Image (cartoon, rainbow, N blue to C red; front, side, top):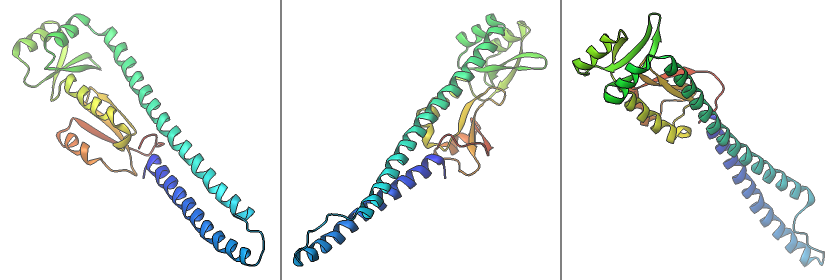
Length: 219
């Protein structure tokens, strides 16, 4: 169970427990007060110790709710920072890439462009397997390495947008585009399972799973 789900369960149990205690105390004190009233003694709404117990449970609930909200905000901030770091890294590579050929392929063959990465021999442009021969000739004439991939950069970005829109409910810790594997790489804690909504993407290879035992930051 993830941190967020665990927090939700704890908060729910504590709130329910507090409500039950309050109801019990209300019924109990109503009977006690009725007895005191029949004996001519001054009734009391609640015993001091009982009040402290109830106050303690309510305080724990409030603190738990605060921690839950803070955890959600922290998770979103971590995801945002990860995206920024990935974008900075991509932009840095892009600045050193043979811009003329890369930009031309991206602008004019967007449906076939799958991004680029580095190898021991230099930069590599990724293009889809159904790319036209004219695109292949264009890249080869620029003396730039290339390789076939299954998915375009646009398709990978679409999957990223889907995950980013609801990342806290996909059991995801981190995710980013891995151009070498031509997939969106998703990190999931070993204590979790793959969300059924992602399974189709995993089956077709556009999402790859990396199991990790690191600190859980997302649910």
